[in-house]
Length: 254
Image (cartoon, rainbow, N blue to C red; front, side, top):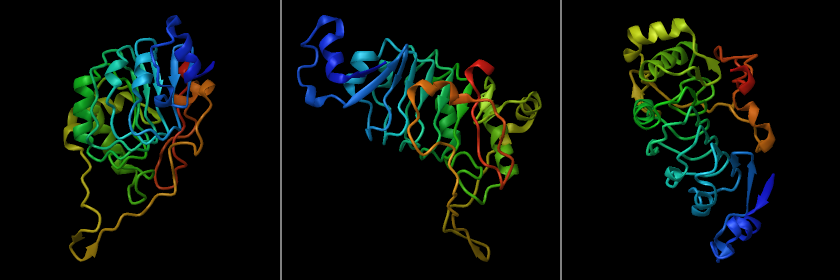
């Protein structure tokens, strides 16, 4: 069910004076059951009115395809179970409020580079996360972020992430295997993938980043009713330089 912000403000608990200046409201928002979608609006931050109208009422929030550079205001959504932040401009300064119920976090196609810093923040403030996706970030060393990465880099990254977040059931598009848990516990702490900075001379050659033609996400904003595709059945998985990318796991398959 889609609502216009003006209509919502007029009917919200019968109070027409809650938001007197409608010119300050975002253009539109979609609410489906307890799921809230605010995608493709090119917002740099979470609108205050979004928090005031829906903060305590929803368990799933999709803020994908915006230009978010901060998550200020997210503390106003204390009951979230699922948070989708794909295709934004979030970097290493990202800060999460304490969300004790959040189990799904999707950060595909952002600007995150420091995996160690990110994992510390997730471990501290999002203690129940079991589904995490970071595809398309430099922090996730696979073909989607840099064509020079290979399958070994990606597997080392998985061990490293699982060492820091041992409760994960899915990482990116793939279910976590028991063998990965064992290896992550044994030596995951040593598996951080570190590469020289782009454009820096190493020995006799210059390392230059190679742009990737792939993307972990569709090029258009998805229909709000297609939320089951966030983690779909994985018919294909990342397996090296010629992978097509990822497929997500469907909720009814979990």
